[in-house]
Length: 115
Image (cartoon, rainbow, N blue to C red; front, side, top):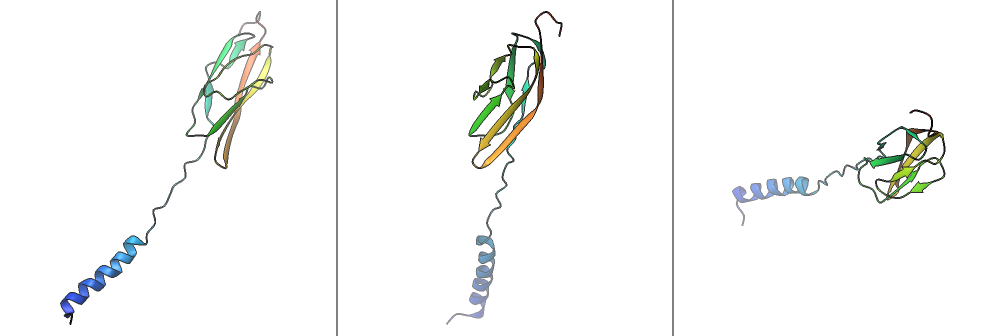
């Protein structure tokens, strides 16, 4: 037969064990972002613009340079062929999440105009 001294510790450990092992860690999901930066925002026709990816982990990405050209490179280089202002859109995808950033405008001037 069990004595009272042995039963009480077993009951206390059993109660504490249920609380400890039934806790599940909370998984914090990192927010997907589509951050990038160009090395220049004002260029002449024919100048090279380098785009730098500054986002977090992704599965797919795509660039729309606003002039009908696209890329899926991580850090693309682009040459604008006509004078105008172009909105650059950068999109990243991870699982069911998509993040889009279209807040960078590149101003392209004719080669004979000063930037």
